[in-house]
Amino acid sequence: MASVLVFRGFVHGRYAPLFTHQSQLPVTSILTNSKKLAYRSNGLRLYARYSESQSPRTQDLFTSRLQDSVENLPKLVEDIVQTSINTGPRGALRLAQGIQAVIGVGGEWLAELSQSRNSPGGIPSQLQLGLLSPLYLRKLFERLGVTYIKLGQFIASAPTLFPPEYVQEFQYCFDKAPAVPFDEIKSILREDLAGPIDSIYEYVDPTPLASASIAQVHAARLKGSQADVVIKVLKPGIEDVLVADLNFIYVVARIVEFLNPELSRASLVAIVNDIRASMLEEVDFKKEAANIESFRRYLDSMGLTRQATAPKVYPEFSTKRVLTMERLYGVPLTDLDSISSLVSDPETSLITALNVWFGSLLACETFHADVHAGNLWLLRDGRIGFLDFGIVGRISPKTWSAMEVFLGSIATEEYESMASALIEMGATNTDVDSRAFAKDLEKIFSSIQACITIYIDKRFYDFQDLDTEVVVATATRTDTNATAISANLVVDERQMNALFLDVVRVSESYGLRFPREFALLMKQLLYFDRYTRLLAPDMNMLQDQRITIASNRRMTNRNRY
Ligand SMILES: Nc1ncnc2c1ncn2[C@@H]1O[C@H](COP(=O)(O)OP(=O)(O)OP(=O)(O)O)[C@@H](O)[C@H]1O
Image 1 (cartoon, rainbow, N blue to C red):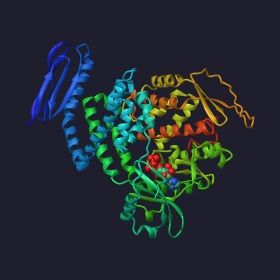
Image 2 (spheres, rainbow, N blue to C red):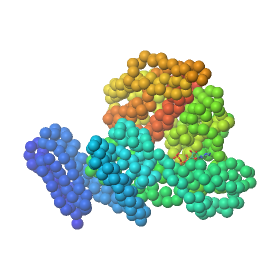
Image 3 (cartoon, rainbow, N blue to C red):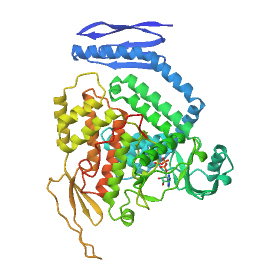
Image 4 (cartoon, protein in one colour):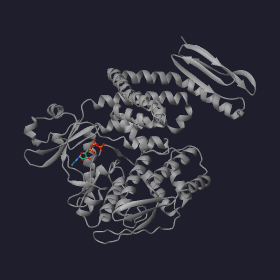
């Protein structure tokens, strides 16, 4: 039965009707007074607070927000119901697993708590918040599995969004998972491949090369060609877990945003939706195969195959859950010692990697959006190997040309052009005061503290909060008597991360909203920044003449590879 709600509250010191709302849902209780307004409907409680001292404008804003919320309530309920239907029985199964995880980690916490009660130092701070303390929340996320491990990694990479103790603790949220028994992997291969396993592969190594949360990788050799390959197999049940968890997280985000509309400015639901879409793409290996193929076509057409590669895919032995591809041999770009034994000039390898990746932004249909060191290798033959195309981004020529101006302006410290590039990228209907925006950007950049990195005998030593003068230090090796000194003024990695997030925050305060690609690109630049510190500490990635960031091969969508 529909009900008509009349909301009353104090407006300009008078108790008066604020607005009326026709609700499609039965209302079970209403509470209003001068400080709060709330009503219950179908188990959900709409609640808001205001104070008499607020300006009339704030009250109007509050009233209109409340009205929005009430109007959105039926949509919210419909969404929740629909999401629950889509989740189906796997939701109940995940709930049971979730409870089990909470009991397991809760037991550990209780045991530690009772031990520390008897200790003279009292209860340590890391136990005081219970399962919400960084340590136990991280343990809980790891027990809850794939979705939460990925979320944990997101927290670890967003230092200005989350408190530092959580960011620090979630650095240990590793994407390592126990291996699935080989028999289960074999039965997936049997179900998915067109013929018997031993008619396709000469052998498959039963010990996995790697086992992450989503997939397991086994080395193998093809029957006819005797080519060395790897088989990446989607772990059983992963898709169900992801769908159930992501739907649950989506519902929580919807409710949180509904109850606290302020959060919609931070696009909480949009972020969750993005994470949901990209994680679900990651579990379809046909999409990954298509991404690899388009990257290989790009290398081919640009004449870059002698500098870089991605594994050749064998589509006849690949499905949505199985990806058979050429095996690459190499080392991660952060393995300095092995790199020095493979090439005499690691800086050149880094420049190649950068040029190939920057070039792919426009010339390739998608760009590799997860270039962490495990996915970017220096191969034994000196080429750069790009692995794992599960996460990719797409960037429009318009966004990229604004991005080029943005990156250029960081190097030249031209804040007005930085502001206009950001305005160009961030979708907004309102007029942005670009001068004020530029001033705010300048404040962010000038607040960076200098940090000196000194490279001594192949190791880096960071000294923070120093004056910007270069500190000279030397180290002498006892065996060779050689002394290595190198000093460089750089912005440290965490500051860099914080800097980009500050830029996003300030931009959002001017009403700008960036496409997902902006965050993806920034993340990759941070990875490349890390490799630059290691392999070419004297190089400025954004200014070096040998690196082509500004693209002269602008492509239309039709002739992208
Ligand atoms: N073509 C290949 N040649 C050699 N090794 C490979 C190849 N593909 C994958 N591997 C190995 O398997 C590991 C995991 O592969 P991949 O990154 O594709 O899986 P993932 O589940 O997405 O892992 P992550 O989330 O850690 O990136 C790689 O780090 C690498 O060691």
